[in-house]
Image (cartoon, rainbow, N blue to C red; front, side, top):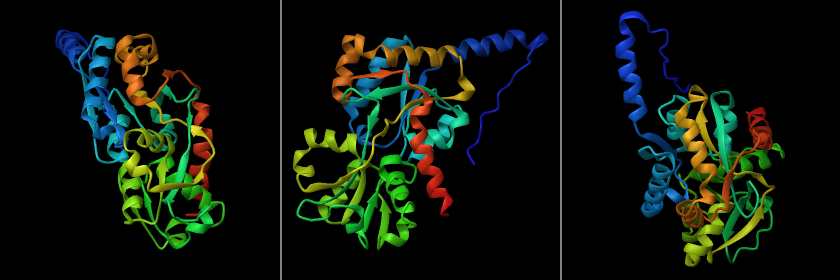
Length: 286
């Protein structure tokens, strides 16, 4: 179970002055923004650019927090130890009552992306059925594109990944899935389509060794989320304004260009309903 931060309230009388001092100190604390270990977390220049932009746009110091797994970042976010995090749609729907939707990235004109099944470029596989018995690389057990989409496709056939594939393993990074397949460590893999398309630009020698076996349906792009514990706070509001205004700011435009994104936008959480459907389908077969 993910732990929740205890919220103290009702301080009065002789404690009023002390509470005011602590409140002022909290306002000066840096905004803490988390990133899950996808493509971007290995690019130190990009992480610094994100920190610098958010610091300027919010008028507050910003700390970028990264961890090895999605679960670690989600735990920090749900418990209120982060002000916001760029997470995956899977943990967003799994902990929907404990998270708020801050902003959604717009990529190629839409708040959507796909999951790719990939294999070596010289392989003739055309569907998931052709991958039966493979050594298959997943990104993270809490990743939509790097696990859930494939698991749901198999669940619809009455199959589970550990039975359909000869062996599966987690690489804890979409770029690592591509590397595993390109090197022959895995025969196939499940990877984020956005990450793969960016890799085609920045590491073409890596993706040239890969072919896309299947592109999935379109799903809601990994969101920027905030803890429900912080709903209505000035800190959350400052981050939302910074994200939604990035495409109107020169520094924000440069950051978006580096991320290959158009902008951040407000979207209805119902956009993530298909991911919740897949989650329930996978859970239904045990």
